[in-house]
Image (cartoon, rainbow, N blue to C red; front, side):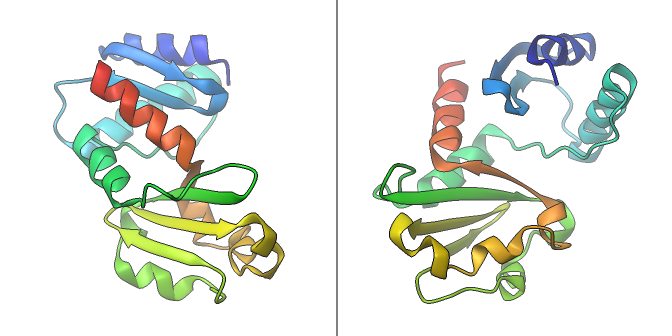
Length: 161
């Protein structure tokens, strides 16, 4: 999906201060719409119309992103030694019970915080992790995953806007 065109789609919806971040569908914007379901419906319909794609989107407020970022231990990074991902959940899967659906191993460090599962592992332990088994599951189809560096950068960009 071309980010320049996606930005134009969001602007056509009447959103302001539209900013895209890396080529992964991350968009920061301002809107007066307060109803999240209405907002999501408008965005999904516009993407279907402009791109011919029927995809679900996740919308998080600044406060939600901020709260999630504050839950991530500062030493959890995404680099050559460790991997940390934030799995943003669709509303119907957003509860602490979601952790029961994960096949966690002792090497997996996982936190649930409203709206997200945060997973951390040392790279050397990746092959022993249960998290790769998540790929292709029903739960996996009801989330969108970003690495911690992306989430932290989005938070910084939102704070600056």
